[in-house]
Length: 110
View 1 (tube, rainbow, N blue to C red):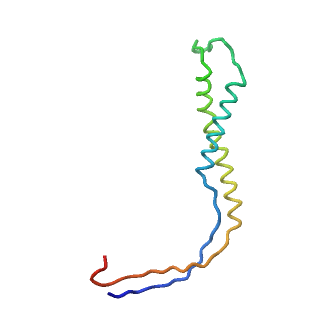
View 2 (cartoon, rainbow, N blue to C red):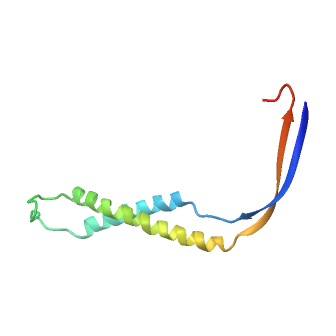
View 3 (tube, rainbow, N blue to C red):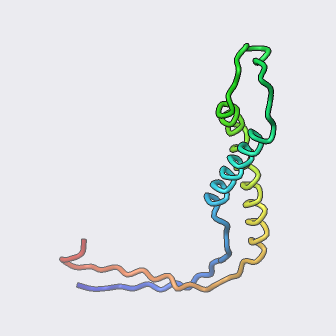
């Protein structure tokens, strides 16, 4: 059994990056909170909708507002994450890494 090792020194750029999933989850939470505030901040009316003649409950209004507010909140915080990513990309630095590759030849090699 013989081993052959190859070393190669390379440079890599290292920088910090925001976690986008966290920003999207926080944006969805912000959208839900906004929909909740909008639902109970405005009482609405006890009249039926003029186009459909249906009276909507507070939970239905909350659901409709969630359909609008959650994607908007996710988009806003997604843009914030992109801006942070652009700012952090200016602070990247180079590091030297040793890339090692080992090859094993022989009867036991898989």
